[in-house]
Length: 399
Image (cartoon, rainbow, N blue to C red; front, top):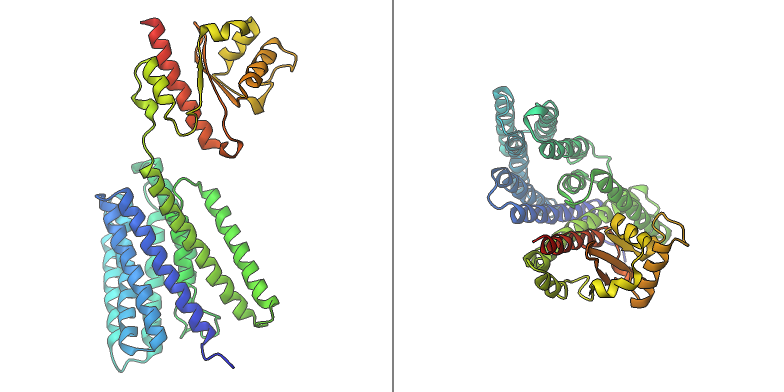
């Protein structure tokens, strides 16, 4: 039994559905993080327009509806103007009047061509192609030629990511005009949009290098999907392998964007660090028991530390506010008196960390952290707890 589905159509519809969902996820995340920001409001409107475009053209391509195809043309013609409004917000200044008028009247011309009944389709497609790709390219140049000194480092970093996304997006948008390039295996505009969104608005805590690495990993995984599909004997068509890879890549990027939103929601629901409310040693000790990571910490007073006192041990504690058992001997000889005393303390309490709370008199907090929880963020939280504790205990001594 042969399938009646056109592989090109199925791939086009799937990547556009993924693109619409990914766009909505990014818009939701932006609104959550900055609900009243003027630039965010412009970006959300533009992203909403993109999502509607992807959804409408999925239906238009599936049903071959002439009316919906005209709606798609109108929506696509409006995209450069929406993108220009976002670019103005990023630059915090108006774009040149000539560029505004060119994009505005170009969009109007493309929209009119999309609804004129007797105009050859190839003409309408060509006009729309020029308006959309040319408009985005012009916006990319506008952002690139900005006055960097008038913007903050953070704003310049965001704009650099947006420019890089536009450079990738423009040639992929061109493939959406399949009437001009009928031999392509599929339309890649939605793929480019998802890549651009992931790079420009993806996981916020990641650096550009990490984003690029993530994309390369996604491409590799999607390539394995395509290889597995071909190896299973379903097809020997390279075009089908490209379509399989594109759909897999879009699915992975959508999953990554959704994961970022879920992770952000978990962070917001996380209760504030109880140590921040402590003002006295007693309050610090009580708050320490409520800490999600080091709630099992034991505070050792002067009498508990006295058997370990030695100038080498005191020097080690003075040099290192936090001793991590895995880092022993902490730049010293293994037979150093301070190292031996610290290791005996670790073994006595079966601990992984020693945290200095004060030097004179000596107070330490000692605790065990599961190895699976050891990462850079955890170590940062431990460092913050140490600083809070030392401030509180030192203030008690000096008052």
